Length: 497
Image (cartoon, rainbow, N blue to C red; front, side):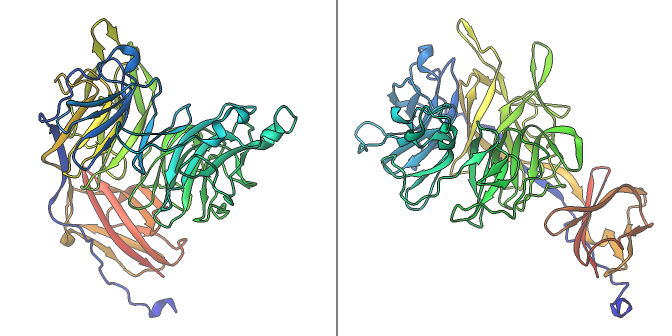
């Protein structure tokens, strides 16, 4: 019987009686590429073990000293320039060279002068496969066998060319070997509804499963809007169903250390508020919405007007915060110039990157039409960060398209209540509990209860401290109670039986 369970036991928070510390950054003056990269913008970078940097961008058409691909020394000086009319949105190390992919192009292998050459040509970009819709490689993943999962949209059956069945030859995920040829036996994935469906990103979870996102309503017959999960053998995981209310363009930008899915949406709607459109959200690995994350409003100022914008890359820092970069000027109501740091719940860290970001994109006789942006953030082994994008100055200093940041100490953040100041009773409980806080100035708090998957179970935006909070509708289990007020955070575990 329920009455046989002990009551009146106090379980206190496991927080510390200190101010949490957040890592701050400053410009590292030991790295400066000068005016090698100008007018264009850096798309992505790779860091070698000797500290040299492979840079990809769009510089060649603007008469920059460097080509669209170039190798810089560890101090930012030019090592090798690779002239190319092509540029890739993403780069990856591959065998003795590199893969370039993303955006509107295909996937290609290239190397530096003197490195071994490979005969690589993506099979489905050959002229025989010029299908009913343009082909794209949006993202790629390299497995332990050096096979490449290429995600996007491809025409894979030339026998259907110019027939009313041509759309049946479209596939959105294939696996190729080091020559670009399809790997025999791989079940190429088909996304359908609408006919121009695409996969924009593929990311791997710690479980070995994969998350794909893009523009589709079903994957191999499984209905799921814009995001899906594949088993480790690449079959569709039908237990995962998208929380999105309709089909929109979506890109998973990051899978964090807790397997949470950070996703950009083109005005998607979520079950909790189907009448409101959001551009950014965070999902749990089971496909449910992470209610602990506050979806931000991100804007870009152009000509005095604010327009919806987004972040492009996310970096999970060592202090349990996240650095976001992109083309934006405002995060909620806070001004930020292409780079910012947020807490786990999505709130901005006010002290970091304040008045410190991409200032302008102005070169001789040329001004970037849409201002600055930061497209890439690459961590270095020594804890420094390399930021690349389109800017001619950063933090008031003349850095062109590349800048390296180094840690500069810590800033204090929200206070955390100590163990002796927060109490729940009764605990365990089956129907209600009360919260006590020794701070007499706090009469009400924002109170939320989460289950151990991170899903919001109940909340009260104006809970009066000491009053009864009914939980008899909750299933038995362990819940995390979180309360916030006046810049302070309280948390602890409640047992419901």
